Length: 141
Image 1 (cartoon, rainbow, N blue to C red):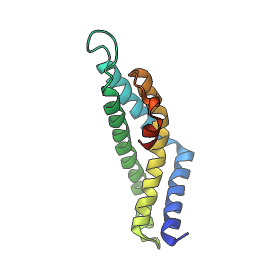
Image 2: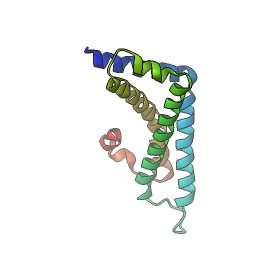
Image 3: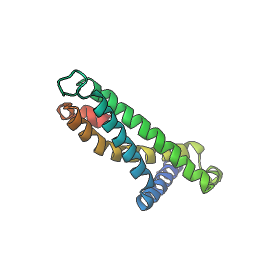
Image 4: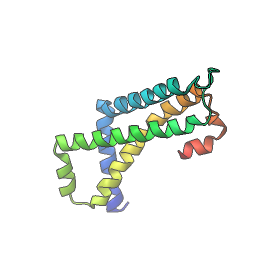
């Protein structure tokens, strides 16, 4: 393993270990994504007067919930680093700054994958979306 990937692994492992102990980001991110999906489902269901969900809205709402949750998680992750002044220590550590960035990115992607495990079935349920007919596309999401 090269030095770059070793730094990536250390930073990602650090972020995921902190999250496993505190569960602060996962709770915040999942709650925010759930709130987005529920608010949009109440807004869009029954708009035509028949009480059914708009079929085309499910994909957009899924993307909105994931993108906004990711933005929230990214901001809170760097806020935690800034609060503990550990971002400066990470940048001063011997290793490429790009590796620190990729390590943080891997941690955020792991968090978003956990959020998607909750959000995708909820969107499929609330919007009667046929999400599970295209499992490979959902996995690529």
